[in-house]
Image (cartoon, rainbow, N blue to C red; front, side, top):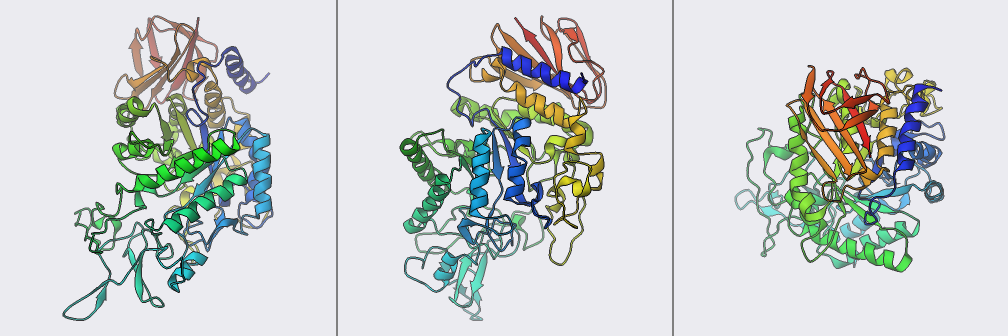
Amino acid sequence: MSATVLQILKVLLLCLWSVSATSDVDWWESATLYQIYPRSFMDSNGDGVGDLNGITSRLEFLKEIGITAAWLSPIYKSPMADMGYDVANFTDIDPLFGTLKDFDALIAKAHELDLKIILDFVPNHSSDECEWFQKSVLREDGYDDFYIWEDGKVDPVTGERKPPSNWNSVFNGPMWTWNEQRQQYYLNQFLPKQPDFNFTNPQLRKKLIEVMRFWLDRGVDAFRIDAVPHFREMRFENGTYPDEFVSGFTNDTNHYQYYTHIYTKDQPENVELLYEWREFLDEYQRLHGGETRAMIAEAYSPVEVLSTYINNGTHVGSQVPMNFNFIPLNNQVTAEHVEYMAKNWMDVMWPRHKMANWVVGNHDNSRPATRLGWQRRDIMTIIAHALPGTSVTYYGDEIGMPDMNTECTPSNCDFRDPVRTPMQWDASKNAGFSAGNSTWLPVNPNYKQLNVQAQRGIARSTLQIFKSMTALKKTAAFKAFKKEGGFSFGALSKQVFQIVRTDAKREEYRVLANFGSQFEYFDGLTNKTMEYVILTSYSPHRIGERVDLSKRILLMPYEAVVLRWAA
């Protein structure tokens, strides 16, 4: 029997031995979430672009690696100015990805496998090709103020018309765009082709709830809410908008960071929408039964702001505000950096909400294998799954896919393309992603060595480590994370990070991870003798070996291990 099979069997036996430690843990509290970028996951029809049927064909892989729920980046009908985050029709599938019938088949297959599907919900804005926007341009009754329209200002000297304020958009350039037909400016926090909704309009808010109901009725289990910090902007009572202040960050006057964003980001009214949607989702569950329909909120905001997303003492909102604290970590990372970022979240969120989640990569940021360094890719896989709460994995990171340099073409040039290349399934043509002659982005040339099929046969591959860590989430020690003393974490030295997961007097797991390039050793960590159950490729040990932690333990450079003790 191969070493790979022995390792997986070992972890599975540990899970079978363990029993549930708590009964008050909802599915989203300790889940393994997996982000699928539909264009790049699996192509079923040979056009070089991933699609819904392709995703359906690979759902069994997600079950194999221990995924709880798959989050689909936008699949709505869209002109693709921002790769689907510019929605033209909120209740239809873009033909590039398939049909509603294909979506229904995906949901059915996922639920058959006991997988949940999370839909990316984009409520901040629509496409300028959306029917709602076109009606608003024409001032049609009911749609007139679905969007934020303003006359702007007139220079008293030159008579020149100017935008209502000096705000810059996230994608750089003015946040106000002139519409010749309506003879007014509209607000766009992102691209000019993404006009922002006017959330002071109750009819718009009803429309968005109808959109959520449409997808819930089709079986969606949860929503990932896009761009929450940008929902609302400051407007004075007299109808004018305040200019923002120069930040000093850059000299480029069109750059988003040229100004501060005290009036266009993290406005206190933003959370009202989350509370409103949570009330709707809870009522939907009461009427239809089933498990919690959760909200996962995307926001690059301070943790104190994110805390209000969950509740403010009187209202409840998103169950999972996404934690991006690990995203800035780079190849200079130390255990002390990880401790600081983890505590920044836990010191606020855990006492107030008993809630944690850990995002290491996504579709907008450099992949961890590149950003943190190839030698640390498995360390972060272990840490993200070993810390209490929910882990969020971006497709391909479970095999350690790196960024790939992609060339701009006249029709395609996005700074985020290097992290969106096709999934590497095997060593066949186009990495098994597509049978077509070309793919929408090139496949990384390393696919013949770095792919799912190859890593299935390597005992200490990134994929096998990933699978072993998700299996540990089913153990008693990992399930006891809400109990007093159920976990601890911190830097033992500048370079070594430790996580302990405990079900008191029954079972304990201890993670030791060396971020540095030097040997590290520790004496007397605990009086327990523990067994090696998960090892990275830098470890000289073998699964099943035992170590007396009352004595000395030595860690090789970049070595990470998971140890287990049982009564």
